[in-house]
Length: 391
Image 1 (cartoon, rainbow, N blue to C red):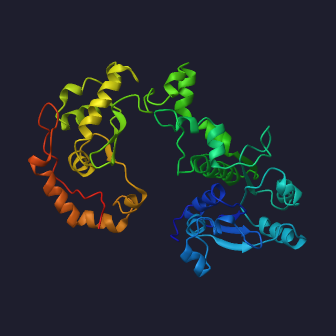
Image 2: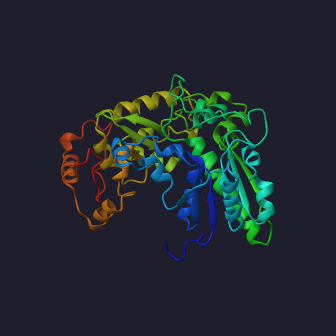
């Protein structure tokens, strides 16, 4: 750990399981904190076996889920239902800076290690409780998971296909944004109070409430008395304009166009050889979700569908027009932005076999197809690489 790690020396007790709490304490560990993960005896954290591969099970090691969210932490087992276990936790809390737990409200108190008890042994302790629906309220004692919190918060309704069918996301938005990041912000704020000479405090993080608070664009529509903007393809950011939309390519892949500002849209129209589209933009009066926006979205979709994803990336990615490929998780893991080894290759100017073939294909004017009403400019010169499938 580098000596410049901002939280070096911070001592954290992590009693959480599953995803929100472990990710919150993972972020603290990544910033230099000494995190001690405390699990119950027996099976321990349920993520040890959740999504566990056959190879990990055969080797007798925790699955990748557990390893990813708990890397960089120390581990121990404590039975909080026993007198000896409670004694050990009190001793650890006496010298800790932060304790994070994710039991239902009242469980820690019933175990005899609630906030009031721990505050007596360490007044400087920052005690963070992560719950699904808050420490009090009509649903406080209800169980829940990410999907439930998204549903209650009005977020799942916004993650919908054009026919209104909610989409089940594989990114746990509520757990991570409302739970993990919400807890992290509250913990750091409380630590700032302690650093200025104040006492520790208890912070309660409700995943559902924090997720609701982050549903900003939907709340803008409510404030504007424009519920229609929250319907699929009727708002500025949910498919109601051609400049901010998703387009299927010839090879069945997807291109993300986020030319929200006029300058980016104009750059994109120029690159496509369709300067006649440049004035058809929401900032110039195009009705969001209106007839012209719908018609132009269809026109652009038809154009994008004429070429495979690689062609569009070769042509547009290096331009200042906010266009990107929709990558699979496997492709993202190999992207130079995230993969240091790949980035080294890019910076050294190395070309993969896929790069060379795709670059030559893009340079063949006979392979470019119909570019619209005019000839599209040649792609800018510079380092490009294939988006797969990569060998």
